[in-house]
Image 1: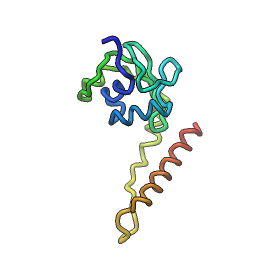
Image 2: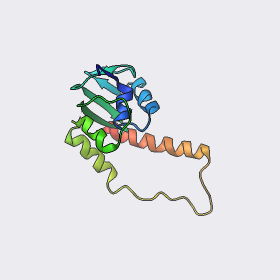
Image 3: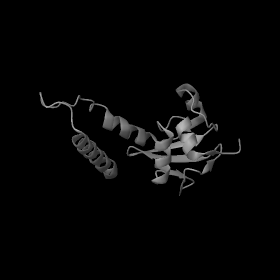
Image 4: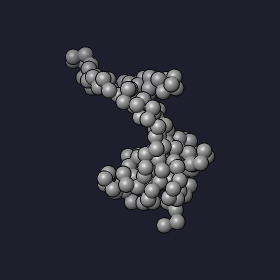
Length: 135
């Protein structure tokens, strides 16, 4: 293979759950190769470093193998080397550990409506982005 589309590679090695999400990440400028924002159709080759901004974290991957089909997680992990700095990985652990409490709603109010769900997601996203930008 001479090259694989970056959106397809990110999806196939399971960095993103779907190809659509991977493509949207490229379009919104969260994927960089050689300090240049990558379009979804950008071709990548072995040995390149890919910078991914995902959920407020800055991740770095070195491409070891090019694949364009989604594979199982054990195989996918052999296709890249995680070069994410330790402090970035610790940021995730610091944020996540100890905050896994179950969210509760008042008894008898039922499930949130679509509008309430959007407000909850917006609130959580705002909190998370603010804490990521503060670092």
